[in-house]
Length: 568
Image (cartoon, rainbow, N blue to C red; front, top):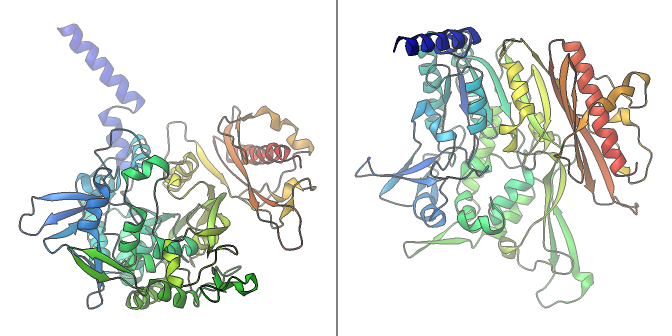
């Protein structure tokens, strides 16, 4: 018996020495500032709660079984211009966000009943696991804030709820300031807090890191959501999910969606367009009478109004009109004015992580030259065709980067909108931002992506130094003397037809770079399709200068390998 106790004591001592035991965790926690996670649109569990019995709550977002039926029954809503709120059509229930596990439950796995991994419902899960490995603990240093994402990001209930959560964390931690990490639309909610409660923000918040936030909107994605809906899954899996048209009928009445339409005040490199191939008359078969009409961010509103003019939904045997909502649009425009009046406190630490290297919808087109639109209401049941720019697949990089703040740093990371929340590159950045020190005291180094300004043809000569760029704005040429050892790295098995990942491991540093080629339609006057090339990388090591050199070499190598695939 005593031998067993002795062995247990030895085990505890070893755990304490290695920092893995309870005492080690507590010591690590004392060095950590509390951290609050704020999810984006669709990133919080929503429960429909019976008005007569609050114990009777049913999850309506997210669920994979009977999803469409319950979504339409409990979540379909109408906007109330008197309050600025979107209220469920169901007269017997209301929507609440669960608050278990200090707010983390609502933004972790969005359908806890799922017994196999589906990335679409694993929201903050991977990030939470990573934070726990770094020593964060729910209720003492780690918290979440879920909210009803149908509502406006400046609605008092949402903003005041966020403020109360920060106050509670501040008190629980003994007066420590809070670090905030927001994702996507969650960044707009945090910005509303900054605008409406600037003094409290300065008193309570130590730093704010936002990931993939559509500061200037997600033009084509949101336009298509309002006109045709959004489909989260493809193939057989979509049968488990809410139908595309069901999401459409909800989103038309959601202020949060209108708040992410293309900004009217941002100076776009090229304004996003809504395009419609139109035929003059229904039975007019003259191809000369088919024309492509283009509408900018302001002009497209009249097209959306006409397309949605006769839109209705059926609920409890009633037909309810759901047109484009001008009242919500006016509210959304006021939200944008509020956001860009917000000022960060002096010397405040603000970090912007945005996605790159993914084909991201920017212009949206309905109809075609062969199958044109006659009446605009036909758009609602037409598959959209997109023109793409660089971004995270949902939000263009141009929008995410344009936060209007004096940022401590902006980091572009290759990855899609939700995938950034499980990206090792993002985790390395957060490790540096949150000043996480492991026992080897490694430093995270990030090399920002640089997209070539020129569009290149296949087979064309291309200068590598235009694509490989570090956070210092220095360049590497794969043919230079100093980079002849780049082949000491290794290619990843994750390489795809238009993507290369390259890793370098040395005694002093570990670096990984991702290079991606994005094909584009031929420009006017060009015969060939074109490519733009971008590269980005991350590294960690005991010496920042050596880690920086390693990541630059990895970026140059990844780009060189990618160019070789295209015979450039």
